[in-house]
Length: 158
Length: 434
Image (tube, chains in turn orange, brown):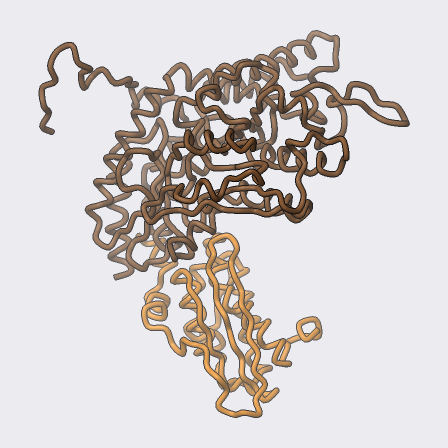
């Protein structure tokens, strides 16, 4: 079961069983721009909605809801914890690091200072069939942020 | 096991057709594999079956000894390849008891076979002189069911979009059976074609079709049965089944991928316009117009999957050698065993019939609220290969209120020990996620 333990790290199972910040919320500050994106994984039917509330600089809240496997749901919880309250620029650096980790086929060594609990997903990158699960909320976040006007790059803003 | 003595002269327990499963397993080289340090336990045959040495050998020998294009060469190799290709057609016709060899059209798979019928309807609808049985327009109806694989949903949705016809649906009962309660209202004089799954790829349900066939005949519609899951597992006789079309695919019945079958009543195929244009499907071609070959060639444009067809013929020989009634019985016993065994797993919910009657050896289930992807992943770490997800039948998942299911499916090489490995693996899943 050594291999399986790499995939289902205790941190992942903990986020899955006790998700942080789950549930879609309205913005505390009525002047915030709020936008959301709903993404599905067509191969398994997993889905997640991620909502971003921002003043254009700081991501005041990242809320989410969805249903899916432990990997996709834990990933949403980690996303919330890592990026909520962060400056948009910083958030996209973390986003990039997470995508790089997941695309690395297990060859990328994650930086815990950047990725926090996200490092637990290093093992998932060795399971090509599960990478999409881990990325699902992160891709929805990117879309939601772009719709709220805080895209990481011009093509995302478009 | 306790058994009751059956009086002599009555059918005895041992009268059922049987075969030696261990000997059959020895024909499938892949079954020797280890997965993640465990013996392979392959419970995904509804997805694709494994191939016996007898089929792999024929595939190899075709390319090694008889490779040539079919139906267009006078040379020896071309003749051999053509004979092998047409010989396979004859074997398949005999396997399903088709009245004529020419009623067997080779396709890429079931999906393509269904699309050929749907596009023939479409093409007939575009022509004023199209056969009225295939002409569709606003006010006409196509009937399918909530139990269908996407391959028997999307082609009809697209056909209805193109023609303005209406798509209507049979529902599914809580027990996973086709809901025939509204049969008379659902299939009416407006219905042009009814296209139903014979055995569900997700619930395992085998649909009894006689009432539906009777109603279809009464209103003058046509009936297509998607037999992708039944032809590999049960004896199928198209005369008995009394459908107008059946479709099935080679890779689920010990054959290779890339080869499937559309069977249609000869008179219907002859009346259908072509779908794909190209070589082999013509009678004559001029710059002004073309005329078309008779079926089955009319529906087999271009160089067909020759080696695949020949190997499917070998697969049919293999299955016939063991005997389809014996395979059906073996799977019925496995299903009864698996339904009992799965019933002992706490928090396990079976979708579909929970008795081994009117169902095949495909069982979908939920384990508590553990997501099927996680179930499948833990099982894989133990060598147990199951399918997880929506199984290309999203309406069924919606019907039972879940985004996905875990599915175990059996075939002639499946053993009760493998079902035990599944049940043991599910205990492991519960440990990881409890």
